[in-house]
Image (tube, rainbow, N blue to C red; front, side):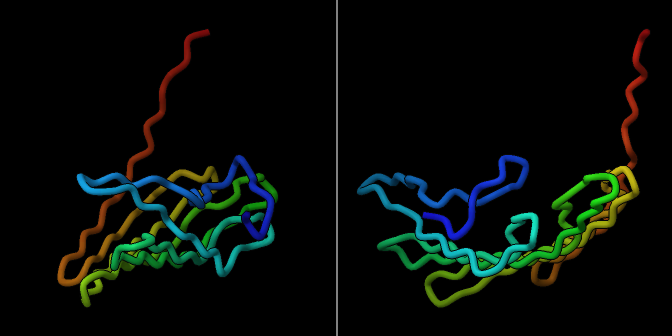
Length: 126
């Protein structure tokens, strides 16, 4: 059971997933440790029951209440741990007033990349 009601407009991690391999089926244990007033998940730990695998996600989101554009990830760090090793990836985004992604920077260990996003406008026929 989740500590808060689900909001269909918000990306929420699935509390129970089935992961199948050649030998058995495992379930995921999810613990949401922080969320904002609009129920956007800000920090979550997910571990695979019976396997040495844990994922920790921490993020900040932008909520533009005036335009009702909620839950836009601005910064996110994802770290996966298993077998005594941890790998992390950080994503930083900027958005415009319409909620469109303008830039995105990704860093993972020794690698990083920055992309300038160009919005795609589709002309509508009347």
